[in-house]
Length: 568
Image (cartoon, rainbow, N blue to C red; front, top):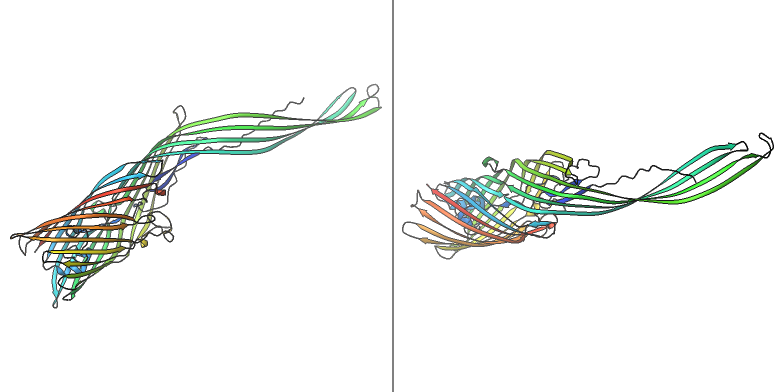
């Protein structure tokens, strides 16, 4: 029997395991471990996106008087905040005045996870901001009333917080078969005093290697997302009577971010994670070997070196199969932190708000306002920090990696056109009601980073094929004036329904408002203090918060607006 040995190299096996985290900054792919203990690859994440991922930034209304009536103010517009609601209403102001408004907000989000991978609860967070600041100066042009004002207003609010536990489990079965053939031919002489010849040995082995591999991973991650910032507007405004019953007005809005007040647009997302990665592989090698022997030579009939010889030939074949099986097991544990920071600096943009106000009769006033679309420009910084350590089954660190990257891009937002129409009905000298219908054309809202395609900021898809739906709102309000000898106390209230942009159908919110105030002093030198409370609620909203619409939320928001107006 011929004995042979083969040294075989096993085909390389890829044992890399990764888990995809669902986060408010998009899907992040985390490398868990690798069989060859190479350093994990840098995490894969979405490209540049705006800090506000879950939805469009929320427009903020202005003033305690207007918001005490649920924002049904287009046809009322009789204080300094008219510059933001309907600048034509400024002509109703008869004396110079200054005003300031402050906002307090508290929000509670109750999250409902739609996937087994996420454990969510509730998030509560608070904010407070200077909401409005203005100075108003009425004057006469010819015989017509005119007003100039300069205003600061909080235009958009980015405040948002979200936390969750992500349980990323992954199991993958891999099977592969490789085939190879090894051949060897050996020719050797043989002989003795009575014969000489040559033996040719040809060996051919077909090698089949089958790998059945099971990869499993488990990752528990605590996700914490925080977002803040405002877009503010500085707005010089002008209004003038066209006729005794009709006026026009315009505000030029110069937008900037809240960095000057210590509140720039920024977001942070942190995922602290720990988990395990296991590989179980069965490797089966099958060797099918064929040996062919061929020989030929001569032998001697007489004494040695007798010239009388006879030739001979022969052949023989053998075939046999050998099977070898072995099991390879690898187990690793991993700990790491992924953190992504986004901030926008040097943000600016310009647009105009146009308004018209018509006093149809002593009972009825009609108003309309148009906020033109505009483009905001800024510089966005995106920083990613990631560290991860891998440990073997004995908890000995066998691989580690630290990754840090900062990118800066010029970005631009295209903000939508907004229009509203409203009517005011005076029932008595002391009581009126008002109604507004408005639309925000969120289908125009888009985001583009330098060198990248324009996207829908809510879902990150190309804007041309996935624009948001336009959104409507209806607002009803009223005011009753209690007149006393030394003061006046208004009682205000309102109801509203509005849509807000989301991936797919708009989210729907409803709410109510209550407000009051007091006037101190008479005519010149009078001070007016106002307060308004607003409650709003949305059910099964914010489905855009995470990829794959993995979470919907019930949200409740409480806001308190306090204003002071000083007449001169």
